[in-house]
Image 1 (cartoon, one colour):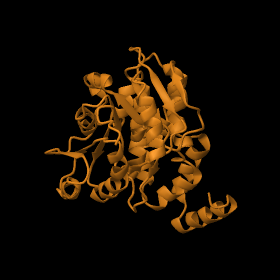
Image 2 (cartoon, rainbow, N blue to C red; image 1 turned 90 degrees about the horizontal axis):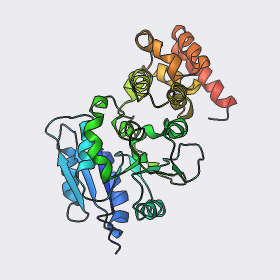
Image 3 (cartoon, one colour; image 1 turned 30 degrees about the vertical axis):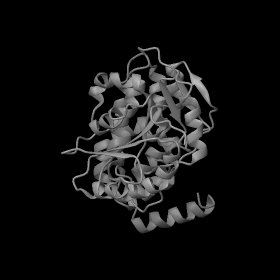
Image 4 (cartoon, rainbow, N blue to C red; image 1 turned 180 degrees about the vertical axis):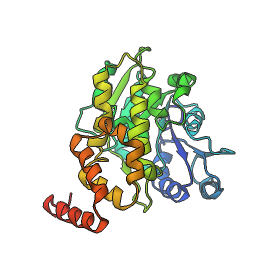
Length: 315
C-alpha cells in the first residue's frame, strides 16, 4: 500500500448534510485507503446525524471527525484545513467525488512539493491546459470566476499561516477564494493549475445550501468581495471576473432566471433589494429579462421556457 498520509489530506467542512457525507465516504474512502490518505471532517451541524454516520465507518476508514459546538460559518473552513499535518490539504465540499485516475494526477503534482497552491478543474471551466501561473492578474482574469468552487483548492501547509490575514473576508462566502487572491499579490507563491482534472458531484436530490440566497450571494456579496480585493488587480479584471461567474457558470442565463422566478428564488422584493448589483453580475439582456418577467404570470413563463428549451434542443 502506498503511504501518502504526510503528503496530502482531504478536508471536508459540512453543514446538515449527513446523507451526502455517507455517500461520499462510501465512494471515496475505498480509494483513499489504498494510498493511506486521511480524511478530516469539520461539522457545523446542529444535530448529531453526521457524527452517527461517521461512527459507522470509523473502524473501516481513517476518518477524523470534529464537531463544532455552534455554527461557526466560514471559520469552519479554516478549522478544516488546520487539522491535518500533511504537506497539502485538499478542501472539498461534501458533495464532491472523484476517481483514482484523477487522484493520481494530483498526487504526482503534490510529490513535486514545489507549489504553494494547486488548483483543480471541477469540470465546469473552459479548457485551459495544465500550467503554472506566475501572473496574479492573469489568474483572476482566467480562473477567478471558476475558483468560487471550494473543491478547486489544494493548499500547501505553508499557506495556513496566512489565515489571520483574511479575517476581513469571514462570513462573506468566499474565504477559500480570498486565501489565494488576497495573498498572491504580496507574496511570491508558486501556483499550478490542473486543467485536465475531472471531479463530479453526488446526484442526491437536494438544492444547494445557497440556492435561496442566490441573489444575495452572487450579485451583492460576490461583487463586493471582488471589488474589495487589493488594488494590485486591475479594475477591468475585477469587473470581468464578477460578470464571468454569472455567464460561464450559467447561473444567470435565460433558462435559469425563469426557473428561479417560478421557484420563488427571484421576485419583486429581490429585484428592489439587489438590482443595483445586476449591472456587475450579468449581461444587459439578462438584466432586461429580469425586469420584464416580474410582470408575467408563472404559467406563461413556464410555457415560454418549454418553447425555449425545445428550440435549444433541451439545453
